[in-house]
Structure formats: structure tokens, C-alpha cells
Image 1 (tube, rainbow, N blue to C red):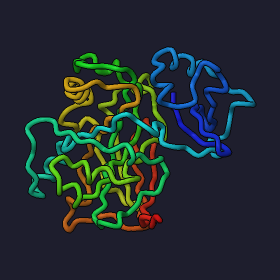
Image 2: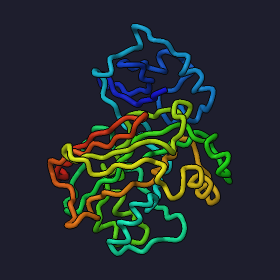
Image 3: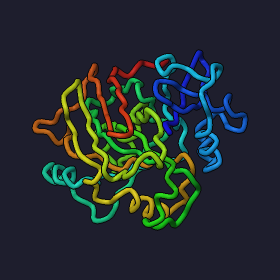
Image 4: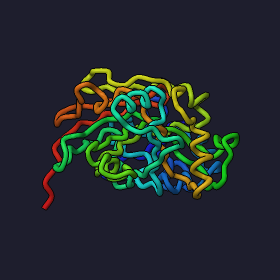
Length: 291
């Protein structure tokens, strides 16, 4: 299934995409909630009910007539791993970065979450805005101390993520959180593709374009630590919960590694896509002045 959070005529709800239609879930089945976090907390029963939903005139909308929002607009955690693609590690070495000997993790503050087509702000305090296409894992059940062998059982599905980064702010702190968490720098979507529809999440082709120019291209097989090792590592420290997001790393081709560096500019359009998952497209705009 493709699960969405969407807005139609100022009403926000959740649905599943079938072809070019969105089937509203809570009005189709009164047992289903209207928010994605509640839906994911419902586990296998909620998934089974959603799969059984059929189109109906009162609950079906054209995909073109709705606004797709971030599928998980308010995750409890937004975790991301750094330097997790072999070729990206190589370009980081050339840029003078020290390579960690273990998995390196940071938080993206949840206020950075953005929609699949939402504008990304060029910060007033920086001109070093960069892009990072990533496969995002959505956790589907509360868990702790999950082995890599069992990790797939706790995955609800997958999304496209662009881990937009403010590079100078990232480098000022060893945790990277500041540079990774500016408002709007976490576009995700366009939907959650449930795990049963992804035969092998470690064999997905991913690409990122800026203004139509290919900047990043890689397969998820290029990860240093695969998705299951990441879940094992994280759950050894703390509980993972339904709706938690895990950004699994970016491949080579980021702007900061180019010679000279090629950071984003106002007006640039980023398109991040992963075969079998979908694509998100976000324009860079000047950060609005708030009163």
C-alpha cells in the first residue's frame, strides 16, 4: 500500500493511493483513525483494515485534487546516520573529514519535517545549503533490543527523504544536529510504501537532481551499515516507537564535496527519487521574515 497524509478542502486526513485516486481511510472504515501516528500505532490490525478498503463515491478523491502532506507530520524521533555510503565516505576523506569507526548518529529535530512538495528555506544565517537524498525507514511497532535478523519485522514502510543540510552550522557542532534541523529541511514522502511491497530495500536505485541536473545516483546496496544493522544499533540504546523515522544515509555527490563546492541557491529545485518508492520535489526559497 501507499499510505498518505493529505488535505482536501481544508480537511486533513489519511488515505491510501490506488492508481490516481486517494481512498480516505477513516470515512471508509470507522475503526481507522484520522492521523498517521494513530494508524501506525494500530499495527497489523490497522494495516489489514486499510488493505480491505475499497473505492467509494463518498470517500475517493483524485490524486490531482488533494495536497499531499508529510506522511508522518509529527514523528516522535527523526534519526539519521552519517557517512553510511562507501563512495560518500571516500569523498568525505578527500574533503578532510575524519571517518568514524562506528555508526554515527544525529537527530533531526521534528520541527524540520516538510511535505513532499514544500518549499525549503534558504536560512537568513547561511548560504551553505546542501542536499542529500536518502531512503527513510518508518518504524511500525514499539521495540527494544531488536536483532538485525529480526529487524525487518518492526518496519512499517519506506519513504523518500531529502536530508537538507546547512553545512557551516553542521560543522560547528560534533552532533551535527543544528545544521541538520533548520525548519523545512526535512522533506519526506510522497507516501509510505508498506514493507510488503518492497522486495529488497537494500536493492533500490536512488537519484537526486538539482534543476534537472543529476547530482547523486547510487543503490541502497552501497550502504556501509544496512537498514537492519542500523535498527539493531539504535534499539540497543533506546526504545523505537511507531512513527519514528530513520534516514539511512546519503550517497556521494553532495554539493560540499564538489570542487569547488556547489551549494543550493534560491530558486533551485531539488528532485529526490527512489525506484519503487516515489519522488519528492522541493524548491529553495528565501526564508520569510517573521514578525
